[in-house]
Length: 299
Image 1 (cartoon, one colour):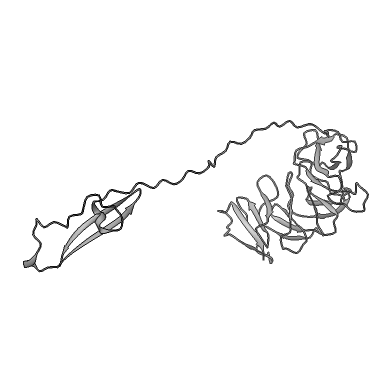
Image 2 (cartoon, helix red, strand yellow; image 1 turned 180 degrees about the vertical axis):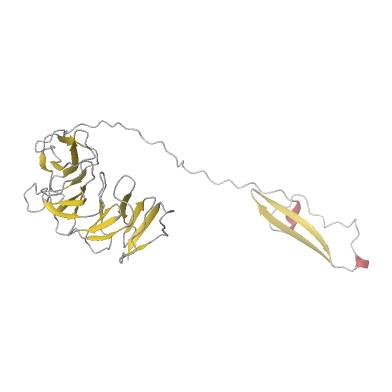
């Protein structure tokens, strides 16, 4: 008994066909060396049909060309126009040097409708210092966004002095619609109301140019302030504090919205949640020596 088997394999971009001869006869009835497979007529088309072994290879597949997906960006002009410049503090003269990024928020009822919202004129809040004393206490200043007029300047609030190069954060901390200004101060974190008056002070590790950040860490609709290795709630109560780090140049932390609950991302060569933290758990492994980035989440 003699069985002819043809096999085909697709190898881009062409089809390879192979013919093999298998002998199922006894040794005495073996196929002689000069035995040949059946003759395939010339011109038989190729394909899965076994007769295609001697046929021509199919043409290589070429996908249809589509519209080009690369475009050169349109380069336009950028010609900013100066609306106003603030370089003079009429309330605390000499405190007019700015290092940290300002914050923009609506602080007062400009249109007289009884509400402070996005229909009012945005205001600009920032810290300032005198001369080159950026490492010393300074002032917190608020100016109107439409003309740069100074609204208020605070050099002392409740006996606490804001740092002249500290960063500011502005938000509604208690859900009342009233804005608060949070800024690093000598000995901790200082909170002012929308008029620059004292609200509260939190004794956390201080920083000359710390950057407080605000977010709802627990999803309860109330804001929390993240400052270096500490978390403070909207009333000034310290929720927890890490064993290392402050809000300075070597430690920056901020809340991250990765879905409920929020996370705290931090970067510091030695950082870990404190052992007595009852409402936070590390989301990634942490050690006192090897970790440079940690993400913490409230439990």
